[in-house]
Image (cartoon, rainbow over all chains, first blue to last red; front, side):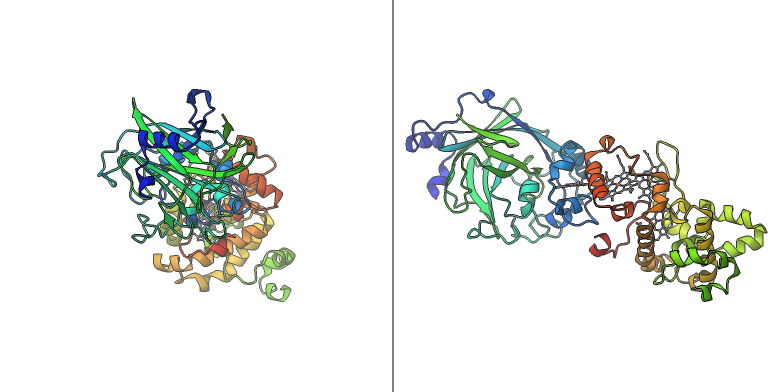
Length: 292
Length: 204
């Protein structure tokens, strides 16, 4: 475990090369890999409990019929973020100067052994508000889910893990983390979770089932991030198959995918979140990882 | 039905309509509330038609302070009060059925039911809020039963160009058309704040 924790940055890349097959390597030229544009909105207080109730959310009825968030919201994510960040809706404690949304580009590739995921985005202006997470100016995390067993995973990316009683929510409890309905590793009802933290320069391989666990996964090889000319780029290297709490990725299949960025030293709910997308391994999807 | 109505001469010719429209479980209807001064109107303005016209104006509806102090300020912030087209939906546009016959029926119901029952029951903000859910539910039920007739006087699925709408609306409307849903199924709270004690069942 300790070893995994230290596997970051250059050291981990070297480590990966040393232990993995010599063929396993991230694309040499990312500019040749197709990029998918994804807007992440500042979500305010919109937990599952809010999302799925007709009186609070106009989309509830249609979500219950299986539509996805993007079918209604894909073209207006920036506007939604603006409405919320300004305190116009579902945000009891607006932070002046906070970015309303972040536009990120996602690229994916694989080589039969590892999945490579690259996220790039422009660093938004700092709000100047007190720092919540002193150590980490930026954190980025993605979740993967297999088969839509987690409620809302297929329709809404990470949203299925967001609940009103989680820490930093207005009605939350300290120490209460993300979880999913009927979450259970044994039953396959969980999200696989990988995160990279800029300040600690550290990668985490966890999952979200009945609670969120930040470590124990065996798929994540490394995560590397850098800020250049105001632009972030973070590359995750993840084995296609890992162990418990790691979604096993197979060529020809698609998986449910969502990600979030804690910008501006944010903590807990004060992040920017994507709606739900599909990730295909050599298969048609919103984001496709083709074999190199 | 007919027996009851025979006490009210004005209703006789309309008893069929009354039968069709009456909602047995509701103590007083919203139109009744809005038109509580109907009888007085006839007496003071001395003309039936004048009274009819007068009672169907917004001014009349908010001349009683229950409406002026409670629902009116909320409505003034909505699109039906002020929008770029200059078409205003006033209280009776949504609450009083348009055709003369329906109008009459509801006014007669109003004058008969209301005087005794209403005075004193919602004369403070607290009492209004306490009754709000009951009033709203009765209005939802009425609109549901009439397939949101008043909304459809101005809006209409058939002439709605969902292509031009935002996706969050068009996705819903296409589903609504398939499922034979009606406007009020989704557009509760279109002109007023929703009652705070509304339950999820009220929505589904």
